[in-house]
Image (cartoon, rainbow, N blue to C red; front, side, top):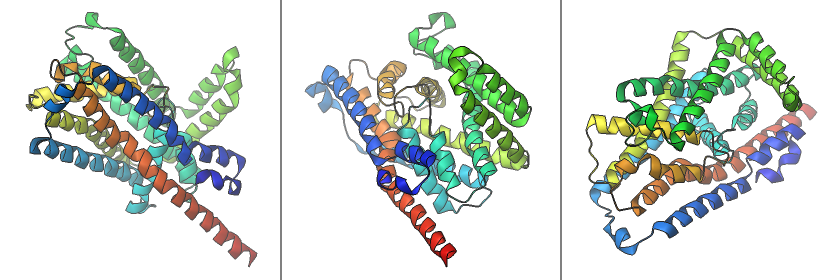
Length: 371
């Protein structure tokens, strides 16, 4: 277990290890069980449950969802391989993506697993500059995907990508306004980080440090200085790379996110037999899922647990059968199990072994130095 080995690391590293200790999976699992249990208690009806058919059609689309989950993971592995310029083997990239996803799953979605990612990559013999560049650049690329694609989706499909039956922005409800606010905030910080990485990193550092002159932000001055320095280091590292590098990173990022949303498209087709499979219907569904995730990205709960299950029904009610309130809960649970709880389980298996390998490597080096 991670918590039993922390004495081998520095104080700062101990704090990071504590954030990925296996016992951290208890809270998100309890929250998820509580939310799903409450929803089932509110909506469960035996007759309605019996109407849900597990046919070959359903199993086929669930299998396709599982395949898209594998493709998503491999796309992230490809991105990491590109970012490390081939320094990691494919197997190592796949393993580290599991650890990265686990850290994100046990952290509030609005915080993410950046600190863990920095620690993990630093243990894999990467330079500080490259480690910093990888972590910041992945966050920027993820943000660019959303702030770049959502306006395109809106221009093609209109306000219906935000909420069901929405024909104009005047129809915005509370969730709609939440999405608009979240998107604007995402666009602002994404643009600032992009500007800092590729145009004027020193100005971004001055801006970050300057903001801490505000009274309630003064306690974050040290963190602002560190982040500013990280951006400068990452900028220098990224400017070494040519266009094929950046295109490869963006395409692997876009593939990973697309697979994440298409996975849920498949689940809905599998369970809701009346779902139309034409391009435009599925395109609208895909766009709605991307919109939904923008709100989930600012969840205060670990991995968005609880909030994801709640917003699912409201955002996708026009794709669910009328009168069946149980089916959306079941689909949401399967979706979250595949994309969230599964990473908690696999991470709980992989992380102790990974820490043990790091400790053994340190012991081996110490013995060689003493000799």
